[in-house]
Length: 193
Image (cartoon, rainbow, N blue to C red):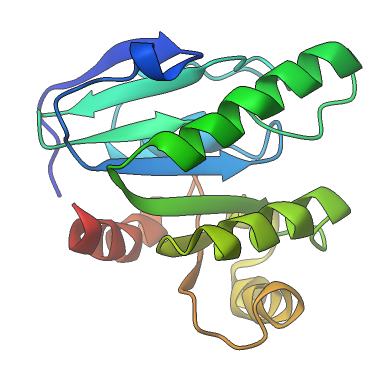
């Protein structure tokens, strides 16, 4: 898919701030610093539409990115960031949950995990939560450039065995450095847009 005019729409913390145009929303979830913003930028071939940071925990609101008035990428704050106060973690967790429960236009949840590490307890909780929503899901094993290209498939298989042993959810590698994986990701996203 070629996105010609992507734009940042709004940052929200409550339903009254969500866009009201009923465009489908492709929602990105994952722990802090797993690469959700870079994922958006890579797919749409832009350097910094979605703000990236080497410092985890930068995204503290739900960011809506309008893709040519066709759909939104929705970047949720990352979880598991220890430097955020407990009070702040609770607040952020509450508005993420509210969004996932109240939004009626979620087309697909894209769940990003780090290909180099076994899923954390928080990753497993998020996976279980996504399954309970009943929403379609795509799991991205991100940062595939950090391991040898010949090992990528094996790592993806291992992660899928741990998280999704039924193998009923698409599970793809991704890398913002090696753009070779983007086409397969787009093929799945397009089905839900």
